[in-house]
Image (tube, rainbow, N blue to C red):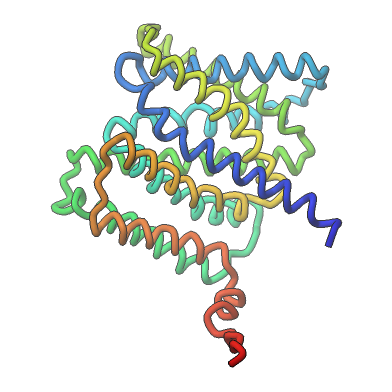
Length: 313
């Protein structure tokens, strides 16, 4: 069907770009930690992203005016997607490897589905509850060695709680993005305003907390900062929000399932991430749970029970 091919190809390209960029940002974040405070590093990232977005909008002469109500929802988007989400993620990666963080963050898919029901009244199919339970079970298995004994001072458990908080924040930001899209707000200008608001909010946080404005001159810090600002923020948020607008949060969130695949490969290659039986089992359960969430029972039944074609003798 020629009419559907351009849309299909466009969505496939958006998926590929989003997955490859955000799947690799987990690894890039590692180079932002240590010498520069998390809040300051994020401030640099989103200030640079906002500058680039506004220059692009100015160059294209895009209209930048919105109503006060729309600005309120853009500010919510900035709070949850461009500030709180990343503060928690950066903090979490001080306790976890990038692979573990990416895997735990896939729970945002389940949160998106539940929040879509809560905020927009979209019904939740029964398979989604099974998928949610499977995803939660996968997280428990994945972190079982660290959860054994329920030591709440355990670093990995602290990291897990931070990641889950980040996933919830990102999901709420996604709901704000869906609302903005339904109101007909353009993605590019909304992201420009949102990143500006995020940078302003982070500046206030740094000033109030008394955190020093330090900067690292190491090539690793500068290169990773540029990558996170240009690719991880400007480009990836544009492609992901385009998917949210065109496909809805449930389907677009499937990209989140694929992030760990990229992150695990990079973490295995560069962070000496060692796989164990718990890693394989937990990873499989998370992916299966998320796949179940997005695959109707009719398709699952057809895949499992459809007759196999017979080969000619």
